[in-house]
Amino acid sequence: MGKQTSERLTQERKVNSMSDPNHPSGESPQQPPVVTGAQIRPNNSIGVAGGVLGIVGIVLIWVPLIGGLLCLLGLIFGLVGTSKGRREGLPLGLAITGIVTGGVGVLIYVVVTLFFVSSGVS
Image (tube, rainbow, N blue to C red; front, side, top):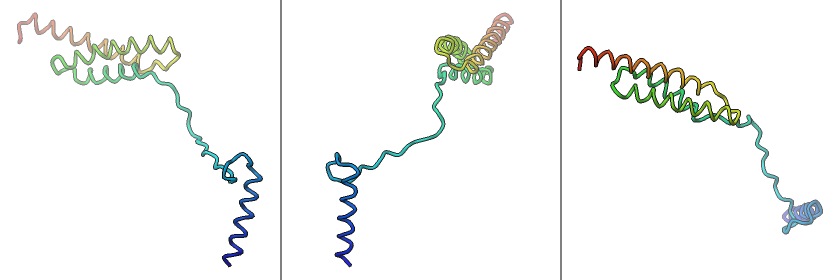
């Protein structure tokens, strides 16, 4: 039985060496696996950061300095993300969300701060 197996392996090697004569070992190389799936779409990461910062800033607007700072950063990142998105053809949705929520949050923060400063509450 061992002799038949070795003869069969020898025949397979001959067939493989005929199929790919350029391969040094005479065996056909394995093909790399083909990866299929969803295409990777470019995103507007600065715009996403602006949207997230704006939303978190609105939620935390009642925390002194933190809410106002996050809203301001959301507004800035939203403006930069919108500019980048228009220039490079990237999605603008979350960048606009950052502009709106950041702007509203900064406005609320300024109004509340001015109210407390003018009323003398510390």
